[in-house]
Length: 357
Image (tube, rainbow, N blue to C red; front, side, top):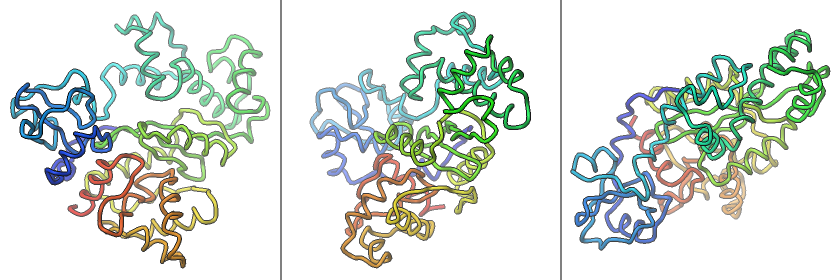
């Protein structure tokens, strides 16, 4: 997903100076992306969470974007690396992913990566940290997802075996069963949650979909991401594999419009099973109009139980489909932002986008 300029996200006003001072002195990572602090005595700018020695407030000025700090004459900190916080893949990763997508049934070996001018160990480290999969596991999942499509659309198992790059039926069966939990010959009724990675102006996201609709949309750096993936796997009783899907394509297009300020409602179907209470909370979130907010107490009252404020907060935090189910529109009764699994800086930007578009 390409990300053009999004001026409504770039014009976000800074928090009050005392708030920013408190945040950087505490190393509060939830403010990373909300602002950058620049140290006049060193000429360096950092994220609020930087672990370097904290400068005195009188020696600090604040900027809303990397660009502003750099044009003011500051250089990026080598410890917290603020230039790497914008959420896009490095160019070499885009080349690798494009290589896999162009021919998902091919085996990409270390020699192939070397021929692309890449160090295989570097590729492996990146995929493990970014996707939670080894590079070869990512490639294997893409091959098996393609093989499943062959079988589900009437193709022969023999075709799927060799199209997926396996040299033997036994190796294919073992790999297929590990991922899909069923034998290849029984896969006509099998399904999987298809995962896609989306680059957005506020960081990369991982999305999941089945034929019924999307069931996951989370920021890849969220601490709860692994637990959310496991919840999806358990709720849908299906494996998770990286693959294309029509609902993911629709979601990409609608997110593009959302960040451009032209899409206010999502049409992509959503499937979000949870407890009865969680589902009621998530349904209530979807009633909050674009550009407006509600307090946790407001949501509890709408559900008929004013005392359920904390339970509403927990359910809000367990929402697995960010933005589309707009949990960012729920704030504290005082008007303060409250919490947000994707980080307060993202919540602030989403609310600013919706208010000013």
